[in-house]
View (cartoon, rainbow, N blue to C red):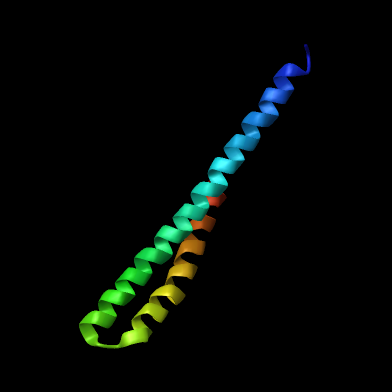
Length: 75
């Protein structure tokens, strides 16, 4: 019976880690998607077809990675 709490504790830690990692993945996709959308709006408004999207993607990744780093540093 002494091993029961350890098994549940390990399962709880695994579930917690999975939820944190999946949340980070979703956050990355959302931030890059928002930057891509802004780039598409710039393309539509200014007529600079692929460049706004490209800039949106290229700016989205560093912004997302930096904010993820700051969030993980606090954990």
